[in-house]
Amino acid sequence: MTTTATPPASISVVLPVFMRSTDPASVHLLRRALESALDQTYPGAFEILVIDDGSPTPVRDAMRSAEMPESPAVRWIRSERNDGLVHALNTGIREARHELIARLDADDRWLPGKIAAQAGRFRDDPDLSLVATGMTVVDAQGRALEEHVRHDGWENVLQLAVERGWCPFPHGSVVALTSVHRLLGGYSHETAYRHCEDYHLWSSWIRFFKPAMVEALLYEYRRSRGAVSEVHRDEQMVATQRIHRRLAAVVDWRTHPGDMRSLAGLLGLSLLRCGAVCYRIWRYKPVVRMPERAVDVLRRILPDRDLYIGDDRAGAPIWPIEDLADDFPGAGTNHRTVDDNAVVCSPN
Image 1 (tube, one colour):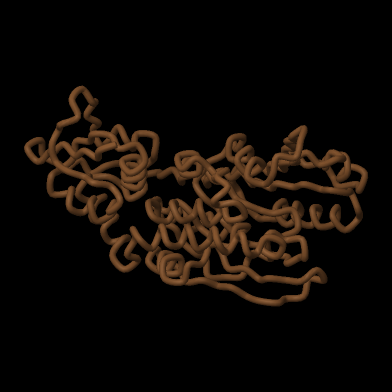
Image 2 (spheres, rainbow, N blue to C red; image 1 turned 90 degrees about the vertical axis):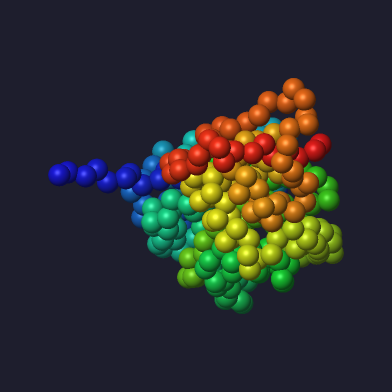
């Protein structure tokens, strides 16, 4: 019998850039970043979206002047004005054509084998939503300053964020599902999370969706004097503490992944689809039909929602669980029984 191999996932790389001047150093760094992405060995469909956030001189013109070879894999998207990093990132999420979104900054670079290692994790585990890697921090001359390799496993990622209040992933190392990016609404424009938009996004992400870490140094982050973490350190710290408190109040890292797996089994859904259901119940507060024995587990997952069994929201539509996850992949087990259903409400 002949079997057909699953084709590799397609990837959109989102690379935002604002180039105040087309000086040789800035052009060199961007070229290095682009080449580190273009040189990845990967058999699947692959595009690089360079989001020019209103640079005074169009970045594409600057790269042509520097004799950067054109590549059909690179798409240039230019904003007419400088709207900031969050706007550029969300433009990339909106414009991405592929299943996965990878992040890269204009002065950083990937090491050989990075994308292949992450794509392999997605291939081997259909419940994964995000895969990050270890990071080497270098100075302006490229000398290694620090190495960060974080432990794999959903519990370990949550522990880092909940107990230590750390952003769980090096931003430029992440490869993640485009569908989850869009479900969560991309990066926040709220001023309360300014300069901390990545941690804000990941704090919601890892609550509802399974992440993974490749425990290898495959991403190089360049530390510079103009970096956000240097210029806006105090403001970033306040935002980080705000996000940390919110996450720690609702997630027990020891039990949360197990509860998500249990709920997925009770609902007859893949873990990925279960995450979409939980997020939509948390975010939109619909009236939902589900097995009564699943309600206590859902309450542990959503302690910040007052869930109860009953239907006292007259006229509100009652949503089947499958309809809250029908745009996410993964077959259900369909083992529920009709007499096991309850109506779960969350008041507005």
